[in-house]
Image 1 (cartoon, helix red, strand yellow):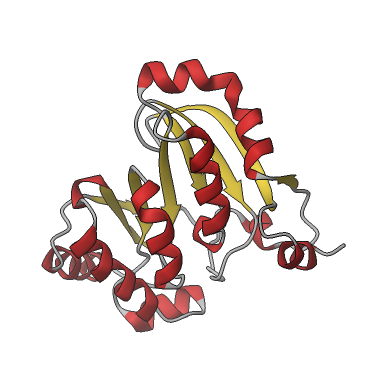
Image 2 (tube, one colour):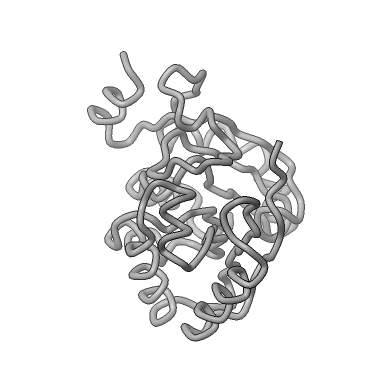
Length: 213
């Protein structure tokens, strides 16, 4: 069965390209496990996880219950350090119902962090935002022409979602990644992006440069 076929017929089961334990300082507070979904709406030129787009990728299928049981081994670490699970990918907000059901199992014992591009319907964001302790948002670039050239998709949906978050979520728990992307934007473009985001009230930024092979 194709990955896309199975995803369409099973609403509470999802494919993952990796589950990485014992991460510290990169995916939120405390000790975290990164659970990376297969599937992404973007086609970034320098994709960090190309397997998330590969229909023939080797994946592991989990239900919210089976993933929860898999991660229980680190329950003590999560509770002792204030850590938990970071959903990434790929794009975790393509699977809002999975995340909602997973949170129902762990409740607030484990903190949930989302690494997302936010290029998803607003309803998906609204489903999971009340359950999410931290957001790490990959902005790419605020300029739509640059964004579209790099990702193959407009960033209009990203700005709708950012505007909603600015008015409905604690901005102290949002980190915005604004990279310098060789061949696509400049340092001035990065600063223009930061300025536009500051106008919405965001204050936490991660500036860095993509390493291109």
